[in-house]
Image (cartoon, rainbow, N blue to C red; front, side, top):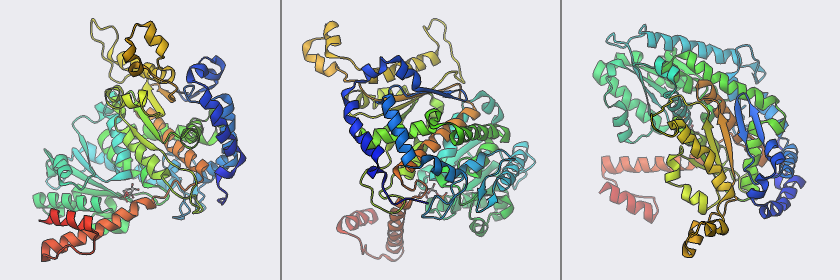
Length: 552
Ligand code: F6P
């Protein structure tokens, strides 16, 4: 299935390399003055407008990128993913998160079997369970309804659900559905995170959801044991059956842990952890908080983008265009980072989630065939909502390093505020910045402009903005559950497109293993030193010194 030739040896790659010189000669000011070019760099899909006219790209660049996509067999690879081929070759797994949000009557095969009925079996079970908990039909060990939920999980078993929860928390319809209920997320093994997340909660009215694909992750399992102890010491060990449920692909370990298998919600090895928010990983805690019908809208939004991704021509295909532009920025223009800048506080956890989706997927050193890459894959993703970021790291983006930016804005605020006497309402104020920043980056401010404004000569270099800094803008109609699902799927597929073009496996994560196994050696040492007073042994000078100081 995979080809052992590297994409950098192909003619389209070489053509793009040569094309960089032309582009670097052209300032974005010039590119932006070409109305036809700008018009063709606007794409709309299901209410979402993508404007990539502020990318350092011409129509010729786009033609060349599309030719690169063809050489990389992008269409074929997308089809392989959607058709359940085992494209995660190092783990021999399909990559089918699209099946998690497929309509009930859809057919998505893995190993020759349609997985959609199983997906809906679990969704129906979640609906039934969450309805019972929310209505008070399911009660805790002392007969009280469970109004609070602590979801324990880390990485993909945490970041996606947290992003969606944070966004839904601001949506009027979702707020209404969540009235009187709390959803908290316990991720870090740091005792401070435990203390913070159980503060003010009563075990009698709390349901704990243990979320772990493998059910072996050290942090999650320790946190799960800690909250099991919190429940059983308050209510007795038999209370665990009423107060703890699980989400996992490993139902044997769930049962071994002491959670009733009837209260376990399955997902499958063809769902990668960072792509699992649409499985029970996200759907269960979010349904408990907001009710299943809100979460179903979120799934529908993601599914609409899946349809678009699989069928729209590449020149109109949002995730494909975004993915190709990222490859252009990273591999050709040499910009290693990307800033994700939502002008919406509701999306404050979007960048941290995409950070995992993107960096764990595409931060690889070898091709899918194991050949060392002579180019860098992946990008450094970070971000903060605007306008907060403007008062923090934007200085560097405007006058320091070039970092391509994704500006994400929302037309209709879910919380409109209009103060009497103000020039514009609060949302217009926020969005004024959303519209202004991309132009500030693209056009900059020249020496002549500053001199015309009588800026003192010695300040001119400090106040000059070179401009020519790329960004793109994504405008969403609003930010309800459906739009949140759309946004998620756009970014998930964008990351896949990048990986497909770079010729890597975006769906494994071997790079996280070494640190885990070294931590287990340290864990053994700490145990031996604390219980038997054994000296620190078998580590290098630096680690030995640090460990000894810690144990003192
Ligand atoms: O350590 C990284 C990782 O394996 C992620 O890929 C995953 O999302 C996270 O840990 C949590 O894993 P699990 O859901 O199996 O507990």
